[in-house]
Length: 288
Image (tube, rainbow, N blue to C red; front, side):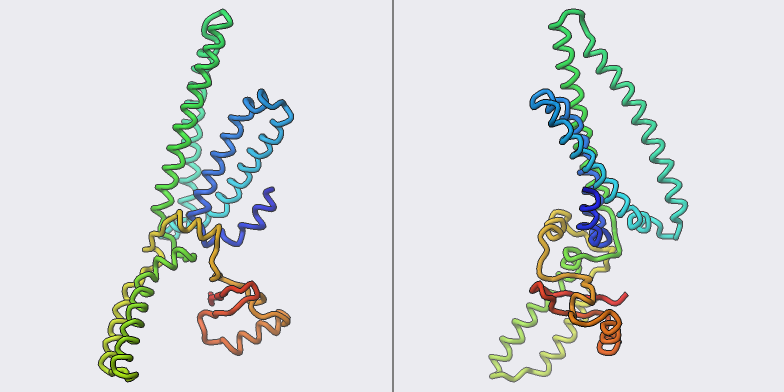
């Protein structure tokens, strides 16, 4: 399962850092929920089902570790604005140790309290009530902490200001440019029809001036604040525009050496290339 997950998602880790960081925390909570449900499933459907539930929980934790580890480098680089990655890693390790210690202490206190609830009274009825009360308390605390955990990670991920673009972030960055281009196209067509096909030179000068103003409004990648919901939807259901297409996908029938020489000769001065790939989509390759 882990190998299959890595094969599908590894090419998206760099461009969808926020989404996979949040996914790691959510899928980890899903795995913990399955572990909590395992005893109840075994009691209701037999012990054969517990193996499947436990395996699914372990698979969720594997996906969590893979997504969290893959996005950790980009997030650390985001915070290391002065090139102090070693200092950040040391502080992060210390913080994780402190949080684990506090969680262990609180877990011991909670376990003793739940044991007190389960063993309260000596007769069977009170013991049954005690187990029920312990289950209610444990599930209530688990649900509250899970909600707080997901919300805190969502709020933290939203604060990240990354220097990379994906499809949704590019849409937000160039939104003003697209709207202004559509507006200018409509005005140009209208004026051309009104002037019987002639385009006024003053209108062209005004359009050039407007273009310069619009280009200055394009957001830098670290200023883009996209919707994580729309970005996740775009990741799951991609459009016909593909970013970062491999060169061998755009030109078939050529060896790697011939392909390299072809693009070096034809597109030596270009910063990007737009091509039609066989999957009926538009691919873009960007010079690094």
